[in-house]
Length: 384
Image (cartoon, rainbow, N blue to C red; front, side, top):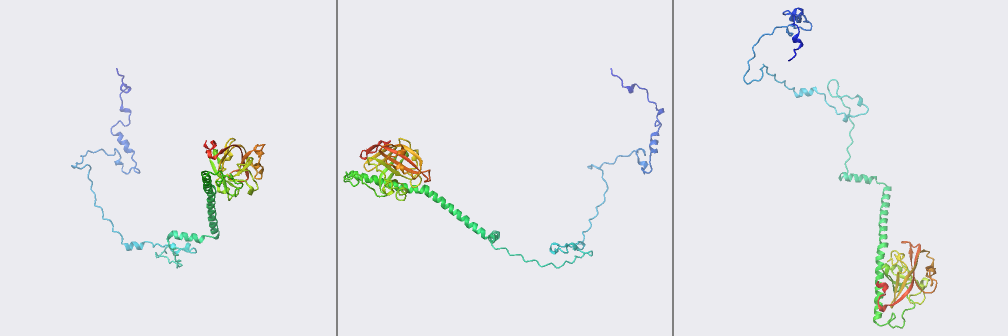
């Protein structure tokens, strides 16, 4: 069952205690609140007049809103005459053409009468300078040339000289390290081929000596620069002619190995002599550089001297990595600095060290171990 609301169960309302219960009391109270100052039309306030019935306005077919009367718009006023409008404008004065730092503060564009203010006579403008012919690039080059000073010219000359010197230096280095080797090796190979051809012709003629007569197996003395043997260093892949003397221009610079002889003041033995020390010299760098890598030779490596009729085979025994150029004792008949104590048949190779310098000397010693006739072909030291 639904419980009834409290207002439904209360007592009925009695109008005796309500001041607005009488008919028209509420409307009278509202009218008493009219203020003639703030409400000039009190009759128009809500409740001032009783609502009156009225008929709804007729609805025109096809119209969505009520039509209201309107008046035709007035025609626009005609534009003022151009001449009259122009006379009303203040004329413009170009102040840039009349600039004068002394009177610019007193200028005015026009006086009160409307006429332009009288402008003082302007100074005549300087005629613009004619641009240099040839365009902007040519003008810039001409200006740069005018600004060139004597020191700039000197600096340019010095710079060009330094660049030229650098190019010449590079060419010189290339000549020393590459081209001299090409020339020297070509000459040495040609000399070696000439010697072997000469020896082969002598063998075909049946002679044991250089002239084929067999009476003189080897000449006692060779002229300076004359080749008489070939040096083989198999472990270094070196084959180079041996010439008499150690003159740089006539022997060493041509890529050959030189033999210390009487002309050099340091006479050493010939390979075919029964005792002695065969002294040889060669370049380590440039000019053919036949002794470039003798510092890598090890004890037991073969050193072969080939003559017209014999191969003289030595074995490397010892090495002195650095000594003074004045140490000529390394060429003694018994080279004690190489560890030898008695007479024998030795060979000594000498060259400069360190590389690309001639400050010290590098020495390699060898001892004869075999003689092999050339007529029997190459020895095992060269074949292997």
